[in-house]
Amino acid sequence: MASHRKRRAAAVVCAAAVAAGPVPVAAAGPVHGAVAAGPVPAAAAVPAAASGPAAVPAPLSAPTPDPFAGLGADEIADRAVTATRSATSLRMTGRVVTEGQPLDIDFAVNDRGECTGAMRIQGGAAELRRIDRITYIKGDEAFWRVSMASQGMPDAQIDATVELVKGRWLKIAPGQAGSADLSGVCDLKALLADLDQDQEERRGLTRGPDSEVDGTPVANLVKKRPGGETTTVSVAREGRPYILRMVRAGGGQPGAVRFSDYGKPVRVVVPPAAETVDLSKLEPGTPA
Image (cartoon, rainbow, N blue to C red; front, side, top):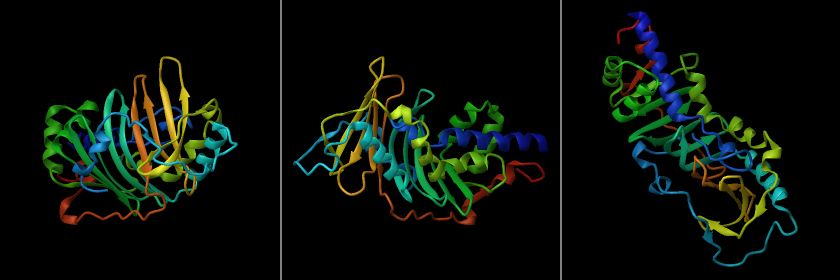
């Protein structure tokens, strides 16, 4: 019985980790490849805009002085990566495709390993929070069933686990199964470090027509690949040259992610103890 609980605990956390991320910021554009997955509110609060198709750049409403005058697209990308890597916090929203499935995300994360966010995948929704090195994840029944089935858990174990975590937060402490995997979702420093991992990948960009992202003028850097795949990175033309949006069109994994709330506090609320279930309840030596 104990070994069954141990396997179940591992499978549950693996399922959550697979569904939740990590969120590869760098993978969202030509600064390092293509849009890929990754999740400040309830799970239902993933914005509707995140569920739609890849965003189309809004036309620039009025001309503004160009802070990138005289710079090539690759040089603008270098400045954008430097600025974005310096961020102490940010918010990511959008839709990406992972393993052929669309994943809607809305995550706020800071450089102290804290995060709060929501995601939707295959009709299921979940919230994730991390604070003081403890991860909390709360999914609806559809989320848990889809996630655990993807890990090959038998139906009987899925039913028992769903009953245990129904309406509750699964609490995963440091050192418990899968804790390190889930913490990667909230590791802003590691995510942003990936932006500069392969500098050659962001070469060969061209600058497209300028536009706006949420009212901020942006320079659009475009990279086209064989097969009709196009990735566009939008860089702020006002204030620091942060990356504000990455869009991938064409190819097998289209998606769009917006980055906002740079430097804003990330407030993570610890769920009430009465609404949590410790992962140890799925591990050996404790009743499940």
